[in-house]
Image 1 (cartoon, chains in turn purple, brown):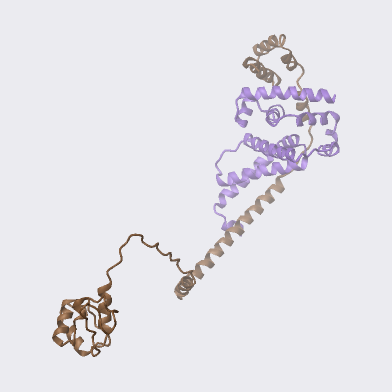
Image 2 (cartoon, one colour):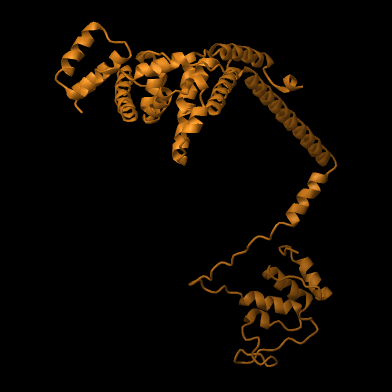
Length: 173
Length: 219
């Protein structure tokens, strides 16, 4: 019944097919990226699902629209930052035990938790630059296109983020 | 922070990301030798730990099934909403057609008009310096016409006052107060002379004859 009353059935099916391909290609990398960003596995899954659903709605409106991995990372970054800001506004701090549960047993080393603390200490604009370049593997020029700033600004933010991380890791060492 | 220093910060970031060439590395090394804060940036980058952590990740989530379920739920929800809107529009259309065809709409409209609150009438403020209208003559004519012709018309005294009314008709103009026992000729003459004279219900046949005789009277 559902396809009878929905206009543009072909476009919906086409969008579904494209989304399935995108999910198959990017879901693992994107979910890991978001989990490293927000530090919560369930939240990361929700965010990634929201990102792909937003992509589906966009493709349903315009099936011919080019949709790149950069768009997915940009949307995921924005969603993740929104969640982080909400968490910070509510004053939530994740206990160490719960932070451990967000990662698998083989990833719950002290070094990994130190890294988590170092990332939490970063300002949002530094975090997104570091995650896009050092973690997702984009160059500073590609990250600048995703974030809408200059490549030099991305490199500066990475440098300042390194200073903050070095300080935090030095304190915890 | 100076603009030069910001440039070296960007250079340090490029070196950490592996995007700097040999010349840029040499330039930064020369600057870091003299700058203490930039010398720190030349040390081992903490980004390497992040890259190592990425390579050590083994989590393989699967969201495809959940996403497709969500997409299909959204589609069925949209379809239900569209179907509901269409049913509602069809029902409303039928209702309106029936209402118009049976005249129900007109009756409802009239009832609505009846139950509407009365319009608010705001009294105009009294005019300050408007002179009173000269209604004396009209009042006298009205009184004259309503009086039966058989009744005696009060005579005017020598001083212009009525003997019978004791001055009540003091404002009657002379031309009307002097009419005594009118005949057909005098009544017709009066009506023809003054178009303001109107026939009242109790006026005798004599007066009607006078009205008929006067061509200019708007009877």
